[in-house]
Image (cartoon, rainbow, N blue to C red; front, side, top):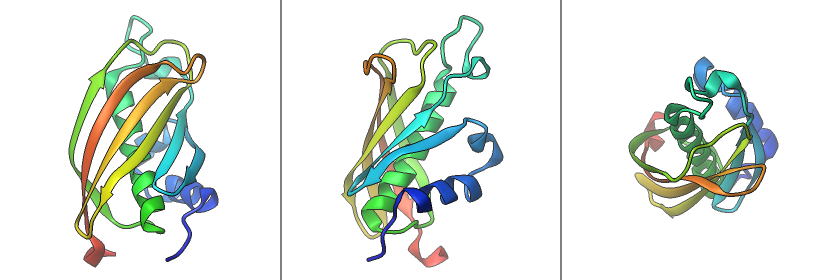
Length: 141
């Protein structure tokens, strides 16, 4: 099994994801085992008119973080697509960087399941919880 490290993850972030995902200014905080932590820097551009980071940005952060957690668990990037994502918004995220802690619950040959907790970097309080499912497309690599 190959090693999927922070350098590999950063390269993937810059080359595989759509330009609008890259515009979220995500960075890899840590990666290893069956998990990954991504940071999304606060920006007014991510906020609704009332200063709350919009749900679409939080969902994209959770989805992207899980790609890295799955890749870490597999030891390499595998083509995959989101099958399901359920997210619960716990409290408004305001004026803080956000950290998405993604963890693989189960990695199979054709499916992967995970859990993501999104917290504010300023006080580590959770703002959202996501449960995810991905189809692994090993043959399209």
